[in-house]
Length: 436
Length: 163
Image (cartoon, rainbow over all chains, first blue to last red; front, side, top):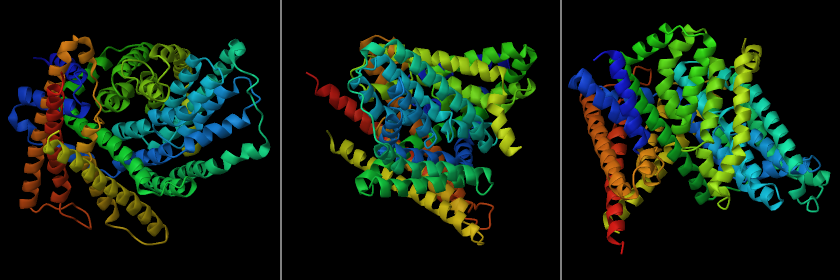
């Protein structure tokens, strides 16, 4: 069999195995060991456990569980509710303020938490019931949270960007900065849409119930939330000032967040701490297990010369860069609908990186394009994680309504991808400006 | 429910708690090392220690992750198959998961024993032995395999109790 044929076979088998419901980490191990045995002989699998351990025993990888810890400390606390509530109080006079408060709250929360479902859950828990109670159409209410939550992986810190940085050996600091302006742009576009959609359905919203808040009331939540915003500046200062590596920054901010959650939200009881930590080890174990298995998968792909052949084939097609970009985007979109971002990055980037480099694409810029594609996957069936989160916070709203509500936001995301493709400076200006 | 299933569930939670403590330790040690370094001290064991903690934590939390359905999978095929196929499919997947965990636990065990016999150490100033790092793999995945047995027993129990 030629390398291309083996590659095609691997693709088909991997898809069947991954779609069977077998956990992704085991699925990747199974496919890798199976193909190694079949095409490279029994001697080739001797190194499997060592490959996993070598991949996992890296200091840089600590960034992942520690940022997950940071996110779950803040996610489990009532910080999400406070962010939402205070923005809501400040925006009480703006048309569509209720929905815009939600989107902004998602944006702010994204900046202290690197996970998309965690953002949707934290803001959605408080936001969705409140919006529906005030007569915001359920589609708009749930769609805005679903989409707003995805900002979690675009606005730094972002678990997706960290993983991308580790796999492609690009600077995590640069990647974080590249997500800032596109993230803000998306918050603005989402809010504009929410404003327009609310004007459209104004009649249904109960105006008599809208109360105005005094400055004192407005300041209440700000006081509790601002220490967390302080963490963001601490992260930025330490990381871009070159004081500490990403893992160190992650550790310090996780410890700070735990202390703040204990002091401000009085989460010092052992059950509350257990809640935070069990979520953390559970999610970290899942992500890191996939990373370990993916190391074996890329070893197999490279030993059988599939990675090199596939990359070379893509380079030799000599596609026009726009066609190439479109093809990659379509591929990422489809893959993103079926697989979680972590699996896509660890499996696909080893093949795509040389192709992107050959086409002179900037890897930092591409990270932003990839992340927005992954965001779309998070809010589309069949495995949109955020959709399940919404099912949890608003069990009465049918899935179809959530999907209908998310659709306009998906279109905005496509628009953003197009803008960033046409004007790479949207992503690259800030990292260039701050890191040279 | 059998005693075995109950014991396994408890054990998984206990190991998740150990994993949590290890991760917390890693976070604290790194934080401390940054402060210590900033105040002029030099650090040598902190980085490796925290890596050891993280690796142990991720493997020891694996049975709990399985128990709480945290090891993400995509069950697209199950939805495409007729309903009566869902159960055999779920059992098949659990058996496959069990086999893979046993394989990885055994392979990891061999790696650990070899490393112990060769007396391997890392190439740093601190130079700790490597086998405790590797040991996390057979222990964590061995327990995950046992947790799979418990999940299978649970599925069987659910079938029996059906009218």
